[in-house]
Length: 184
Ligand SMILES: [Zn+2]
Image (cartoon, rainbow, N blue to C red; front, side, top):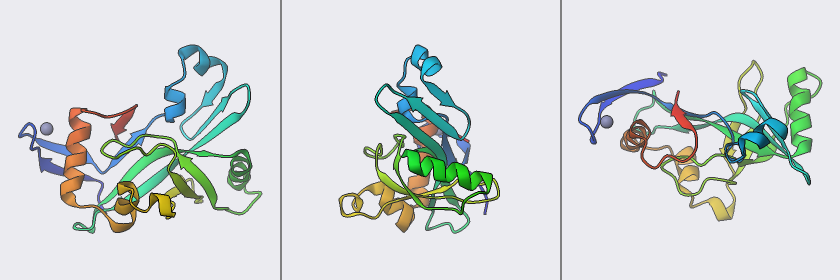
C-alpha cells in the first residue's frame, strides 16, 4: 500500500505528486463561526470539537473515510473528515479511549463538504472506533435515501484512477473546493 502517486495533469501539463488523502482541519460548523464565537463557545483540537450553543451542544470527532481505488489495488484514498455525533455517542467514545468501555458503533453525520461531490453535509454515517491510536473509520450508511449518492458508491464500489486524478487536479488547482480542505 502506498500513499503517494504522481500523474501528468490535464490542466497544466505538469507532473504532480499527490497524497492519496485529503484532510479537513475543522468541521464545517466550526468554519462558519465568527472569530469571536470560536473563542467563546467552541473548543477544538486535532481530533475533537465541541460547540456550545445556547440551546444545545454539538459534538464532532475526526474520522477516516476510506475509498478503495478499484483499478489499482495498492491505492486507498482517505478522507480525514469530521463527524457529528450525539452526546451519548461522544461519552461512549471518551470512555472507550480511556479504556473503561468497549468499542461501540455510533451513528453520525458527515460534517464536511467533500470537493468533487454533491452535498455531503449531514450524510448519515456509521462510526467504528479503533484502538491503537487510530482514528475511527466512517462508513456512509446504506439507507435508501443515500444509495444513489456518489460518495456511497465510491466507498463501497471503489473509484477509478481517472477519478482519483480528477479529484487531485481539483485539489491542486483549488477550483471549487469548499471549506478548509488540503491534501495531506
Ligand atoms: Zn496541474
